[in-house]
Length: 171
View (cartoon, rainbow, N blue to C red):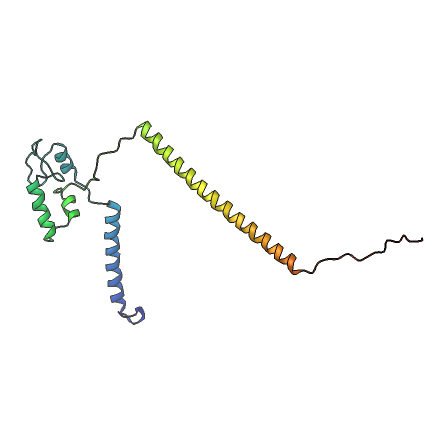
């Protein structure tokens, strides 16, 4: 790749414009988020109408992302063949966005209380562990300081007081 100083001004302008276009498309993708379903497709989902073929999905039949199983397989084959992307299928109303698995969590006062209690217990145990670690560190530091002081005292020559006579002065 040429350095900018050696490049032709027109080539620089072309590269900049292509980079700007790429950045704008990335910005659109990020701001729109994952594929959003058109309003018509959302109403079809509510009525249990297949997004792939437009026919009703019987109540006793399983649907996959808003489609009959056969229609979903056909869309999957098109995506795997590279004829369209999953986001493209969602944006054009052929495929419903992915949902998170599992049962929806019901937030009740009881579950909220229990969650807060568990969180408080976890924080308490974390605090206890941190406090015991801090106390152990302080004890180790204190022991080291005492050992250092004792070593310093042992290294010093003993202090002796000058001998005084027991005679009273003036006697």
